[in-house]
Length: 212
Image (cartoon, rainbow, N blue to C red):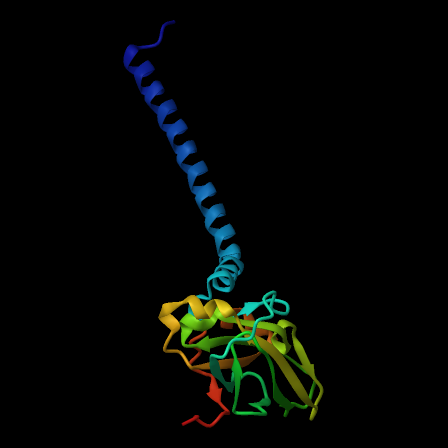
């Protein structure tokens, strides 16, 4: 028994529609998988971008200067500290500012004290202002490189060693920059990833008096 031509045409259309729906579903699955993958990759990729370019005042990480020349140009580095409300610590710089020459290595200290009744772990985020100076501010040693754990009532000195890269001498956009402010904000460990994505945490409270 032969099939009616209209019936054949209907079956053909249905088969084509089924294939189209399968392709559409497959495309949607791939799109969702791509978006999920990018969501996990976005934070580390953003951090790498910031470290390479100094975007947003992100400082650089390095070893001692390869060019040991110390230039006459002096820059004052000021220090700022703030705490996220989720971490029960006190955190302050032990000096308000240091003046050093470009290419010269400096060291500063922060002090943290735990007010918690249990051991707490904190992670520090950081940047410098003016933001455009980030690509020339190089830290060779810093408490911010690792998580910091404090027992109840523990007081810890936290050093940071740094220098201003001589490349700043060739950047005309920074000819008028004589002061750089290095800022840290400590977060409880579980809040650190959120802080890395959004540095404008309105819940942060400053423990450092303004520098005139």
